[in-house]
Length: 117
Image 1 (cartoon, rainbow, N blue to C red):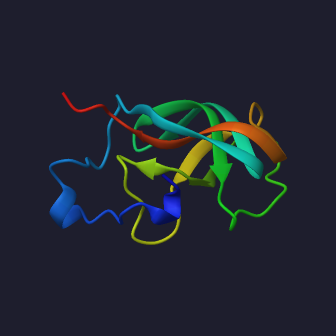
Image 2: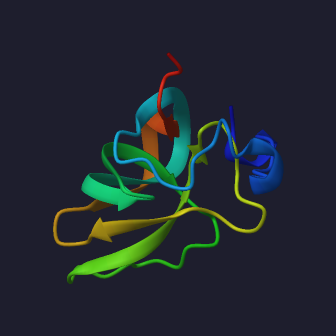
């Protein structure tokens, strides 16, 4: 599921199935991409979850990102299968360990959350 085709997160309707934060959120879905701009992160955080892996950079993110300290970076990734009402999620990324690849071919994480019980 691409980020832009995902349903928009409406907190008034989705509050039972989509929490504001989740310390236990993990990658749920991946897909193959070709020739896309990707950031590989280690222990990036978003809504109290911690994530490691390859993520699509938002096309609105300005490059280069730099390489010092932690910074919020716009990512094309769903939260519990939903996109934000406006814009893209901003993951907190340690730029000293992150790697940006502009013509990445491979698997990226497209959705984070928790598997329903």
